[in-house]
Length: 205
Image (cartoon, rainbow, N blue to C red; front, side, top):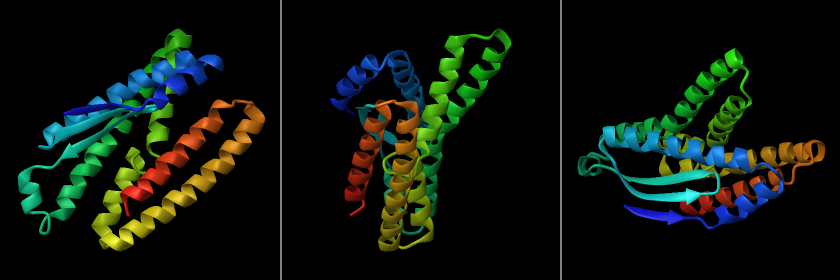
């Protein structure tokens, strides 16, 4: 299994350190590891094996290899193969939602600021990964759903349209957030999402 590190992590470490949000960023990376572990466990249960794990600025990205039997039955049982990818993609966000709920309940009882940060970081991961941009989990789920219901060429076109529309909406929302919150980190996050969307489009060409 290959392991890759996106060096943009260093830039974001410096950025969040300078904006005094380094504790939150490190928490996000820590729970992103558990998020990815959930993907790997579900993938192994379903018979897939990890080929590559990439350390990215806001988490980890994993490539999986289907079983040989899945290749042989791709035409007849393609929907079942895509369903496997949906289960794997949703495992990470579901884990983050569960953790956010648990730590939120604990924080309410004992009024602990650190548990508030843990809750917040898991909610951020949950929401961030559900954005329908490939290769985020939301994009992977959307891609599998489109492949189940559409021909490959139509699925690609729908995917590109949805990703572009999503990025336009997120850019508008982020611009308003930057204006009111005065947080420059939001600008770099939205730029990073545009880069992901651009790479996602290239992958689907």
